[in-house]
Amino acid sequence: RCRLATFWLFGALADAKELRYPDGIKPGDQISGTSGEFFRYKHVLVKPPDDDDRIHALGMSEDIKCETCEILLRGLLLKSESNSEDHIMDQFDGELAAPPRDTDNAQEYRVDANRKGCNKHFKDEVLYRGWAIKRCPPPTGETNAGGTTISITSGSEEAKEAKDTALASGKQREWCLEQKGKIPSERDVDTFHIRHEAFFYACENTVGRYGQEMATLLSERLDDGGDRERAIRAACREAASCAGLPKRSPKKGGRRNRRRAPSPDEDL
Image (cartoon, rainbow, N blue to C red):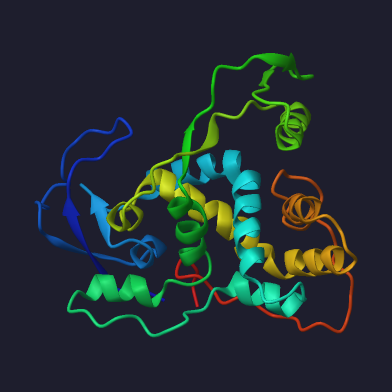
């Protein structure tokens, strides 16, 4: 189903693309859009996102999906009323706590009204906590079976897991995460950028798609007194299959079977 949205165009596009406005569009023009980005961002740089931007963001998200998933779960579990599956799912759903504020700007209202689920999580739990995407450092360390050198940047358990995943997949990551000391402004967060969109896709393809399975696993592990970090890693890697591993089949039980609401990207 088509939806109409308006974006204000301004500024200049980074990421080594030609700095020009599309034919027939000038600064200050309003344009129409039917894609999900128009429900996540209030501003764009130079032009609305196109399929090339989406492909770029999706590819980038594959490199940072597991780490982003774990960051999301750490933040959302802290807000959960308990370790029950329903309370965890309430956090995953991320419904609006209050009606959006009144504004004469139709696009601002549209984004605020759709600030739920992953449209909300990638901003609150990732961008506003200073996380950013950067190119991985030059590879050093071990070589996998395919002859690819795997970068090892620290001795943490997370780094070892990332190394093991890379060794198994035969692929060296191009994109990595870093947490900066400076928190972005609200305008920065509400402006479309390919790297912002990569965080959204990482959320949508884990918490958004496999939220029910993840909540089941987390509740089972945490109710039994399991280690929270291990439960989070298992939820992302087993239930959400963030590293391409076989997806865990959830146990059948009496808990509710909640179907996630479709995102604006999907046909209704």
